[in-house]
Figure 1: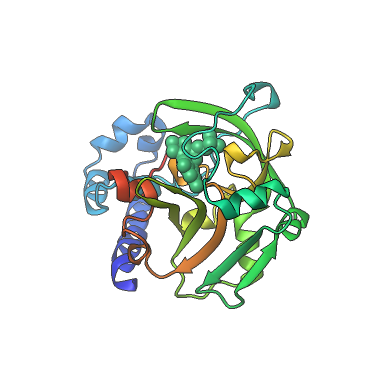
Figure 2: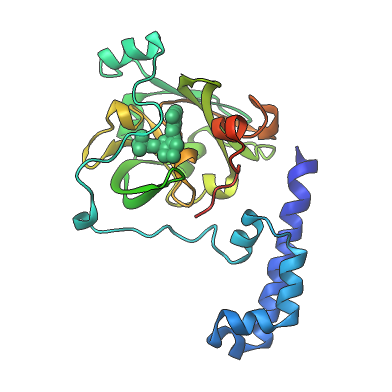
Length: 262
Ligand SMILES: Nc1nc2c(c(=O)[nH]1)N[C@H]1C(S)=C(S)[C@@H](COP(=O)(O)O)O[C@H]1N2
Ligand SMILES: [Mo]
């Protein structure tokens, strides 16, 4: 667990300090933009030192904590597409759907102080967050939608994360060809202000096609990270120990990147 995540984290912290130093050195470089930065040997060394992975560069540039662009109500499309599972074939899920998810619970457990099962009504009664964002699917389509739900960080604070918790695994109700759908994110995304467990889309309760009754929104990443039909959130030390080890259904089934930053 810590053996895997720690070196990357600390090298990035180091790197950010070095980057700030290099920016401070040449204020002109900052003003004239990326070309000037690229010409700066120290900046290039810093990048090399950081690793070239998408996550490292994204984080280095301050991009991971930055907000995803938010749109105006005029930008919302007519119907938000439903992709992947549109109706889980699990009979238990279908029974729950038939009763408007009256008995649905969201379990939050694993490396938390107070493992809890929240009733859907409790989740919907929590402070609401709304955002209009663009969803980008690797299959080549995008859609703008208005999401309402509970902030993920708020939810995590209800159960209290242990220090050893470094990732969240989202367990879903649907099973595809290769197995159950699941996803995982790290604490940077878990604590990102726009990350939420959504229960409404475009001012209506979340339709089944879009992940009813609860789905993840993790706005700085591609569509497949936004787990639908979320039944359980498990805080873990290492997502590599879950399911096929890739950190998500498509990561395991098709080699998609675990970190799909946009
Ligand atoms: N449980 C579950 N979550 C999922 C999927 C899925 O098939 N099952 N598909 C993913 C993909 S590839 C995308 S693009 C989005 C689609 O969300 P939408 O159906 O609301 O458009 O959900 C993601 N989350
Ligand atoms: Mo997707």
